Length: 312
Image (cartoon, rainbow, N blue to C red; front, side):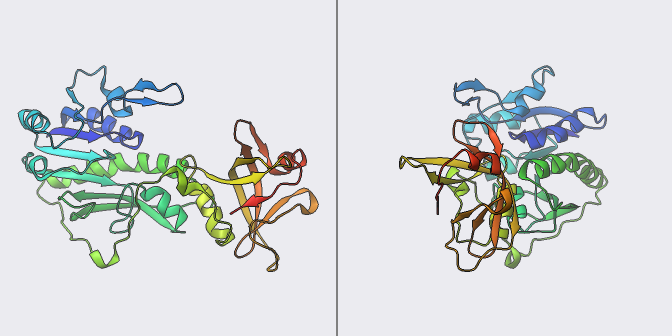
């Protein structure tokens, strides 16, 4: 098949590489987001998808908006049999969906219709899901609403983080797609409509989503700490003796018994541990980092920080 790959995020790289290795398929072009400034130095950086293709000679399109007429024309000129999309960051318009001979397929990192949207990996961990997976779906003009071709599942580990689940799903995706393409090529690919009554949504995460609300249950906060690692990270604010508020990022924590009479956000230090009261139970902080400083174990950090008060 003549395939155009559309994607931006690192999660799609193993799938793109699998397509490049498959002798029965030809990647005739790719679409990815424009190069953008990254990091404190704001260095102009290509997407990981573009970087993976730079030595191949395959045409790379980087329109600001894929619905632009010149972008649609360029995709049409590549005469694709199939378009494969994974973690692109834009919704494809009807003008693009109609271009391939066979279909537009999207690989979504959840078991649809659960967690439609931009942050399904984080939503699965934060929500306490026991499993997740890769859904291969036929694309329509909605947000992850198309018919399902196949789903590949994996169990979410008790210590799973956003980073570890991202990497596991990225390795699950290539086989899921190649199997779907085999079925499609044999005209045996199923097409199951989603049950919209079961749909949930996982909108794009912002930096502010990482602010800890100590009135939530400890188990909820602990799941978010894992889910939002590395982005946006979970943080709180503490006030030092000089009255200055500073961000404290929480990297690891665990749920422990807590006093129901303690105000959420209250810090105690029993037996050289650091426990914060929450809306239910306590949260033992294990690894933290003060803004501008290095990561430390929570007991080590709080031994050197006088009279901390966490705010919620």
